[in-house]
Amino acid sequence: MYKSIKQQQLEQRILKLLSGKALKTAEWLFTNPELQAGQEYANIVSIKRLGFNDHGPVHMRKATLNAIKMFNLLNQSGIKMNLEKEGAGNADDSLTAVILASLLHDLGMAITRESHELLSIQLAIPYIDTVLNTLHSENEIVLKTAIRSLAIEGIFGHMATHKIHSLEAGLVLIGDGSDMEKGRARIPTMLSSQTRVGDIHRTSASAIQKVKIFKGQEKPINITVEMNASVGFFQVEEVFFPKINISPVKPYIELYAGVTDREMLRYL
Image (cartoon, rainbow, N blue to C red; front, side, top):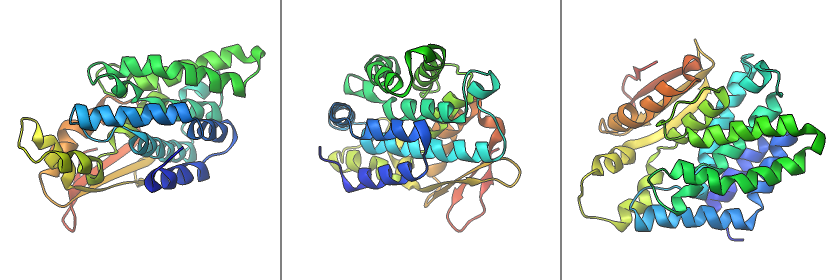
């Protein structure tokens, strides 16, 4: 099973942040050749057939890494996830759901862009069920059902076109949206030099240099978007900010964006 150097590096970074069931979940998904093939084909369709940016193994791992970082910051600040608040599970269970959703959310791109989140759910369910049946006994059906539901909600809501209500799903949404650094649009830009309608998205994405996630001063999470040109504000204001705005995690986020070496503009 071939994996790019970038993918391998991301997997190593993810695994170092995990333990317990969350770690076992990531390890199982990372070593499944059928899933790898599905993620790679989603990228082929996204880039070569549809002309979109990266929606494959690297993107799904970047989204996962971002979601884990934010989960840890919330956890360190004493913010309980919905599973724990509702008495249905613990933090490890919540993180397991976040990882399942983040690593499977774009499988539907192997079919089409339109409503791909719904198609992703159908393709993801066999993987979700296999992982949960491996981790839990038959007597833990309530817990399995809760984790499964959260994972599906995370996939369902990652496009910000459907209302979501859990912090877990909200992390998946923002983790996905925060993968907007210039490298994600590199291959589509190389493959197509013709100007076309919608290229402002590609141009603005190419201006994003770095998305940093770390502990905030006033809130648990600080997300800072650094760009090399002001066109990058389009990506922040038209794509990323709407995702944060609809996410249940919004109250815990500080969002800054600006051109490198200039004053950062605060959105939240």
